[in-house]
Length: 182
Image 1: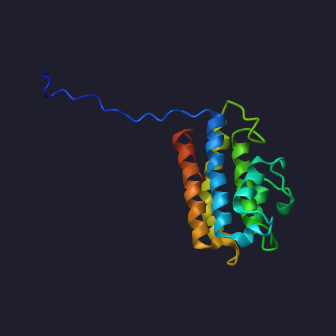
Image 2: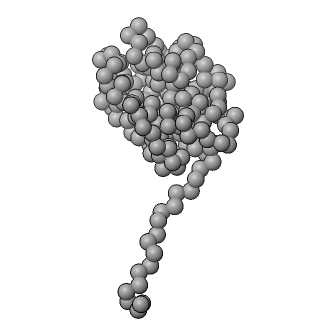
Image 3: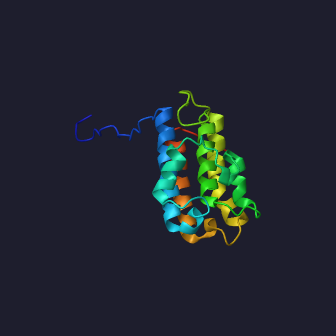
């Protein structure tokens, strides 16, 4: 075969595999940015938890010593914290409940209770369950939250959806997670 007809082999984009700690850290940075953006856009929601600014509150939540247990959301985590978003009696900080719920779901999916004790091995079943939860959350928020909560506002919906999409892409592409969600 002559060189004229020979084609170079197609190059495939190689996405380097993140370590488990790097993956959790990337998810955390996305959720940190979401929290700060939502608090900046909705200071009245922030005022339900504190009198400090969005950056200070975000730093306190992510870097503080509360071990992801906050009195303002009844010390709940994971699915229980997210359930507050759909509880009509809950008049507290919905942004805190959302971010703490998501962040602690991420820890759990990677086999940990916090950002410091992350095992190297990955449980694909747990990661697939996280992917399903992330896929379902925007629809649940749209359908089941009270009309007057900040999470129903168009700006909040856009920011939440964009962040969840980023998390899902990372789970699918970097973690090679495939999920059959019902």
